[in-house]
Amino acid sequence: MNFEHEPADDDVATIRIEGLQQDLTILHLTDSHMAEGDERDPEASEAVGRMQKVFQERTPGGVPAWDLFRRALAMAAARGVDAAALTGDIIHFPSYAALDIVQAGIDELDIPTVYTCGNHDWHFPHLEWSQATRAEHYPRFHGLTDGNPSFGSREVGGVRLITVDNSTYQVSAEQVEFLRAELDSGQPCLLFIHIPIWVKTLASAVLEKWQAPIMMASPSDWTDETREKWRVVEATPSTIACHDLLTSEAASCLAGIFCGHVHFAHSDVVRPGCQQYVTAPGFEGGYRWIELTGLD
Ligand SMILES: [Fe+2]
Image 1 (tube, rainbow, N blue to C red):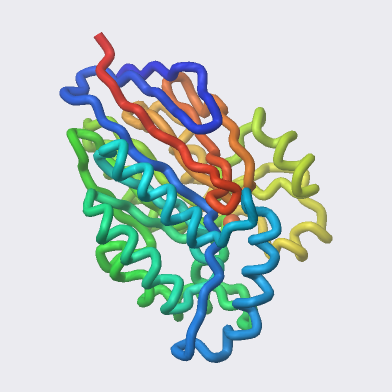
Image 2: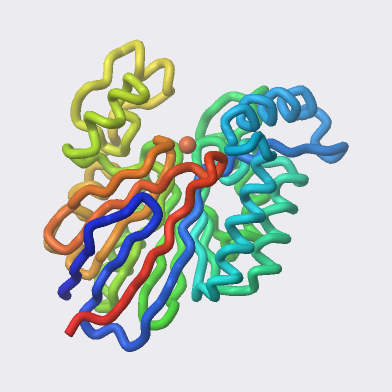
């Protein structure tokens, strides 16, 4: 399948897709980091004020993160977008108050929306950051993910919008099998994940900002100290298999990967026809319009 990518702006990705019957516009939003809470999550109350302050100091105009989230969705509604994709750390921890803001925004937008978790979505700061903590809080995301926060897909205008939760830097064999089947569907595909996959041309920018290669399946540049700080263990065989799949001919139906996590905008070639777009964080006013159009 043939795809052409126009040179990317920070807030637009224009992709020409062979055989696409209708033009589509998709909002990509990531890393809003809304830290909200109320009496339903009393153990998070200390973190609410502290984290709101941290992020509000970095938002344009000092407005709250939830305000920027609402503004992005309002812009999408005004533009008449066909779908929205939210790729993690939209909320800073899984409080019911924060989830209510996300759900209300999506309900109001009333268009097909996909949601995948980031490393913060499911983690209250007072808990251990672990697979077990993620599993414990997954049920809170069932409403946003059609009952499966681990992976999913939906078709919009002949394009498959696929989500895979890679928020622990790892993916499971089950997720890889799901992804493989989706990419074998014969339809053009877009993949939405939180953590960028390792791409050589992205690595230096990530290292410069974070002093650690915080990408999925990064083959180098980790140290014992940075692994411990970021709680990132070596890539598992299924994670490596996922990276191999995404960078191989078997992913010839994949036009783009959209992600966040590293808090700056970037675009990199993954393989011929496929680019990875990292989008700037929502708490800084970032978003991206994904414009899909036919390729003659
Ligand atoms: Fe993140």
